[in-house]
Amino acid sequence: MSLPHAILTALVEKPSSGLELTRRFDRSIGYFWSATHQQIYRELGKLEAEGYIRALPSAQPARGQKKSYEVLPAGRTELARWTAAAQEPKPQRDVLLLRLRAAAVVGTEGIEADLRRHLDLHRRQLAEYEEIEKRDFPPGRDSDRDRIQHLVLRAGIELETFWTRWLSQAVEELADLPDGD
Image 1 (cartoon, rainbow, N blue to C red):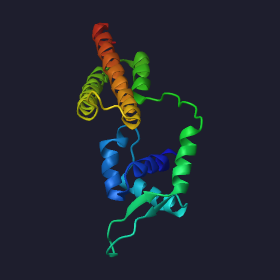
Image 2 (image 1 turned 90 degrees about the vertical axis):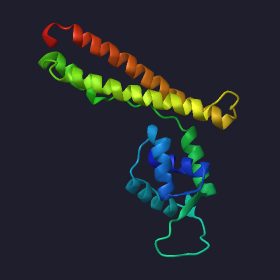
Image 3 (image 1 turned 180 degrees about the vertical axis):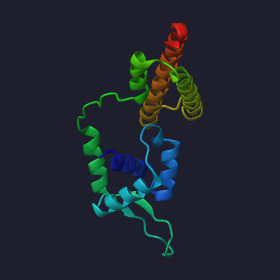
Image 4 (image 1 turned 45 degrees about the vertical axis):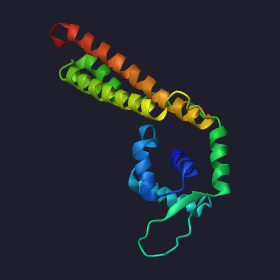
């Protein structure tokens, strides 16, 4: 049920078309909740059918013209209900960790190179998040909305910091094993 709520969040922030939502997901929400173009359009239709959003009236209705959507009061109420509801944390599932566990029993051939690749990817993501933080959250930008959005970004920074530190240690551990085992 989270994708509809991610879309409602984005539309409360700024009424948008499906294409604009897709671009916004690629630039912000997608860092922690990804969705394809098709998923977004499918959910827009469902949200509209449920009375949570509506297409904004167009000055010149034309076939194939992009629709922009806004959140209706029922959608805002649903988003507030969902935000306030308790939710249990999801158990950690990571295929890399499972593969590393398997390497302990079948051998580590090839896994060190993939750990290095993951380390590089996490370093790049960390640098991107830090650049976003520098650009979007300068000192003094501290409205309630800014502070909460910054909390989300800092969670991403902390997660990437964890992964870069842990992967660096994992690569060192594997390099210290005799004969790569």
